[in-house]
Length: 186
Image (tube, rainbow, N blue to C red; front, side, top):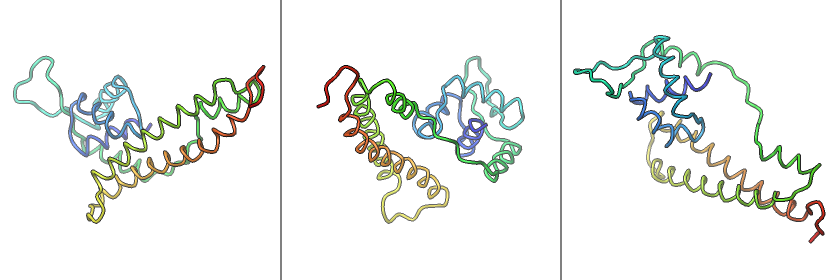
């Protein structure tokens, strides 16, 4: 149920075409709520059908022209309802953690290399988030409430990447110290 709310949020921030919206998902919202371009376009149709958004009128309708969408009052009301709704945290579903558990019964062959690869990916993502924070939220700048909330979302991403890097720093020596089936311990 969150993808429609992510789209409503993005459209309330700025009315957009489907293409512009998918680009915004690729650059910002997608860091914490990912969706394919097809999912976004499909959801735009459903939201329009439900009367939560509408395509902005154009002066000269043309075939193939990008439609820009805006949120209708019913869409804003739905988003307000959803923001105030109680929702339990979702359990972690990370394939890497499941693979680590499986390695306990089948061995660790290739796992250390995969952990190092994940470490590099998390290091890169942390650098992206820190660059966004430095660019968009410089120290000493008084931010509007909307920006303060955006920064909180960004900070959660920074903290999650920091967690993963700390955890990987602990996991890598443990896994590296284990031998794969048929291998001698180092």
